[in-house]
Image 1 (cartoon, rainbow, N blue to C red):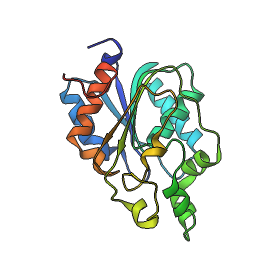
Image 2: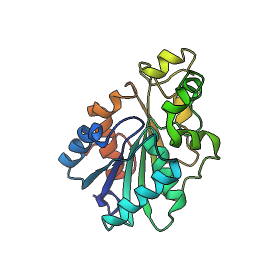
Image 3: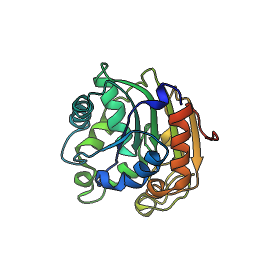
Image 4: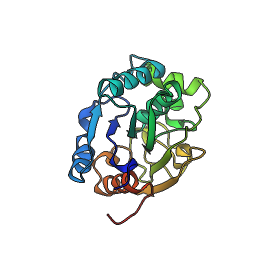
Length: 213
């Protein structure tokens, strides 16, 4: 394992859930000899910047200033915001799983429904209203899903194809990434997919997808 691949891994969950939903992925990575911690945060009550600062504080509490990050959906937005706001923390390898970087058609459609803006929470609203952060110097990989089942497909039948039921593949495009791979899973299925876990392990270890390890 390279030096970067041996670094501790922090896993960050997405909107409306708790870190417990990331336990399958965490378990698979731990089986693969990675040092893994799962971080939980309030996804609706706090702004993206506030959650980013809390993630930085969590990293500092573990004594980490150099690490790898694996983040699902909105968790990827929190991770990128943290790296933008906290240059003292170095992320060697960043994995974004189903993260809507460029935009979120599903979120914008949900906001049009009664109570939808409240359901999105303050973090997503901040993301949609601000300029996207630039990717800091690191190896970054994106896993995009192509199995179009999920809440987004129900509230927005016109989501750009292909999509994972919530996030369109085109919305996961991040300038400057090392690699992007598409896996035929839905947005939530990603968290319980052995193939996604395998690809996460490959990227964390080697900085690329699909390696035999």
